[in-house]
Image 1 (cartoon, rainbow, N blue to C red):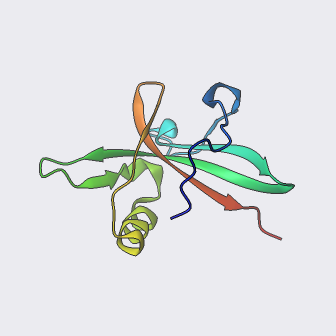
Image 2: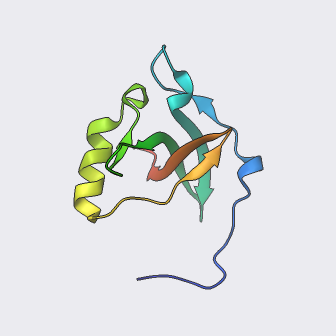
Length: 98
């Protein structure tokens, strides 16, 4: 595991989030632009919750439920969340396309 004691930190307050969830709940999926080492990336925040059995799920209005389920299966884990505006999200970073 590439765990470091003092990794570089991006303060949450400097990110500019766009609401990109479904019309019924646009804040279920947020999108920001970040740049790491010259590589432009999408930083997505997907709203998540735990059901009565403690299983983590992406909010359906994030439009990323299948992607989230696939990611959980691939990584064989649930994910640490971050609070943005009083709601729990996971963060996913992907490079921009060509």
